[in-house]
Image (tube, rainbow, N blue to C red):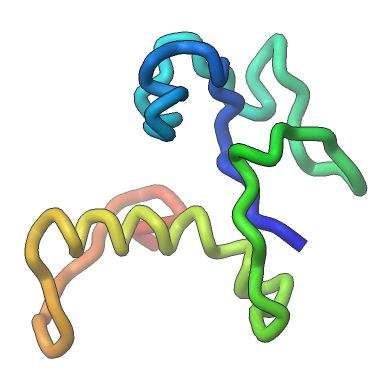
Length: 96
């Protein structure tokens, strides 16, 4: 059971070799040609873009990992900590 990076980086450029997959210049998104989508029973991806899920994390919770990562990243960049009040808005699944 793993969470998978929603992009398919090239794993060859300097950014990928530095584990900065989100900055890959040759990245492909799952579901965007030529990369098929990931809504299937099984897909094959490099282990570099897989993150092991703890057994206490349900499949329903795991489905939100990608969205949660945006919030965690934004909070870290903004210096938000426990007890701070924040507002999340927008028209994507993250802001609903």
